[in-house]
Amino acid sequence: MTDGWRLPPSVPPFNTPVRVAFTILWILAFALALGGSVGGFYLRYTAPANNSQLLLGSRAGFAVSPSDATVVRFTVGPQAAGAGIVAGDKIIAIYGLPLPKRMPVNEETLAQHANDPAYITLGNLLFGTDSAEVPLTVRDRSGRVRDVTVTTGDNHIDAGARALGVSTRWLSFIDLLHVLAYPFLLWAAWLLHHRNSRDAVSSVLSLAVLLTIGAEQPSATLLAFAGVPRWLNVAIFDLGNVLLLAGIMLFPHGNLSWRRVTLIALLPVLMLLHGTVYQTFFIGFMVVAVLSLLRYLRVTDSSEQRQQIRWALLGITGYAMLRCVSIVADYMKWSAGSFGEQLLIEIGAGISFALAVLTLQIGLLIALLRYRLYDADFVISKSANVALITVTVAAVFAATADGLKQIIYNYYGNTDSEGPVIFAAALSTVLVNPIQDRVQRWSEQRFQRNLFLLRDDLPEVVRDMRETASLNEMLEEILARVGRGVRAIRGALIVNGCVMRAAGLSTDDVENWRTSGVAQDYKTDSCEPRDRQFPIRIPLVPSSDREEPIGYLLVGPRPDGSIPSRDEQKALKEVSESIARAIRTVIKREAREQDVAQLIADNATRIESLERLLGFNQTAADRRPKSA
Image (cartoon, rainbow, N blue to C red):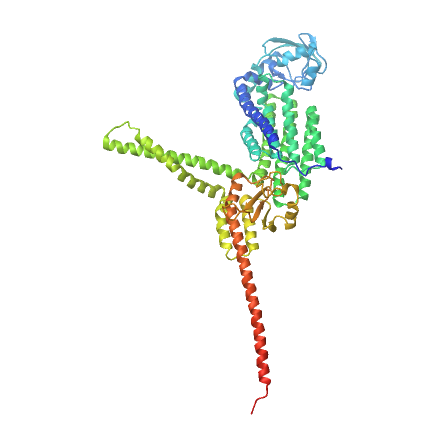
């Protein structure tokens, strides 16, 4: 394989133009999903006549099957039964016009026989909107032929529902029970995309959810009402399934291989299939996706990634099982023997479909939220800040204004002076910054504790360690606290041009990184999202003066490949000066201690030499002969 055809190791993050284009598409899909659901639900609620389309043939007072619309499965409401229609009757003529022995009713067949008088007549009976008496010629199971007359209209299914004790309003939503899961799914889609809009895998899964909601009922009702062609509605639904399967195959980190790329390239075939072949193809690729995740689970060594894949597998497996139940229910309802039985199957199909999508999203979200949604604490903290600051400032303003008004009233009587309001507004303005500082400090301690400890504790720790710890001990503690603070999977410290310490990889790996293309500008570029090894590079400058850094703090990505947030990068820059000063102090202290130790060693050597010399002289003196 030549270098020009070599696959990247994983799907790269969206660059700015792609991210902007994808975000525009995502916004349109979100608007379709939200507006289509609300609008379609409203249309179904205000147009109960659509209930007659719940059962094929119910406008004529009986139910038929799409595989052969000439066979009566059961009657709907008492009127058709009173006219003489019996389950098992075969319609052989309408208005005296003979019908073929078998007449399947689906989009493809209706399109092929658009000019066939028999299909036109049958279509008017099944889908017409006018109320009229229609003469039918039917043959019962014993072979007896008879003529009956039915009256078309929306009253049959309503009468059948009332006979079962089901409200007609409830009947309007009997096939829309999956809408109950839509608020959670829309929230999940928002999280999947906005937690990191450059991440291809989560963004594709998010768009898949939105397209599915935008093409399913009740959105399909709104699209039809707006004149959107049926083929476009189907294409949107199919595209959602294609993106869903592609996202699952790329989960969790978008790793690429030629086998995986080939499978993803085959997915658009789904948009050309229909019926049973479509469902078989879809389930087959779902099985392939599950097997791919199982294989990835076996070969990965990371405990976090293994747990992440297990949650995803739970969601995908639950989706596949419940989706199969929904598909089976959709097929079973055409063999139901009564109106009540078919309603129960419809309810089961709707609930199983809703639970299928819900289970899939819960599994993926737990995996992504637990291991990939690292900015959730930041969002919660900021929301708490805004809420508490607003409430506190409003309380100060209201209390001050009311208190001053009461004082003025007590001393001067009733007054319409605006002074209390102006003074309260001025006081609130003055107190905004102190209130904001206190609230921000509280919310960071509560919701961003790791970042709080990094910003507040690390400078104190290095100030303490610089007097007693060795350089290696202090660097190891710094990397450990930085890793916990921004949840980076790797880190390194370069001091005086040498890689002194590394976490999550070896120092040799860091040296190899320094010679790579993405690291050529690490001394001038503090953030490089394209660098998968060390996207954050913080210069360590010992003072605020303009001087050369004594080293660099290299910070790797999070476990999902995303880079630390802007707040985390800001915190790293804030503590970098304290780190640099501590490193410089330890280097000077160790150099001084080394000089002192060398001086002590030299003096000890001199003392030993002197002692040996003095000992030799004393021995020589003892050996001299003594005089008389």
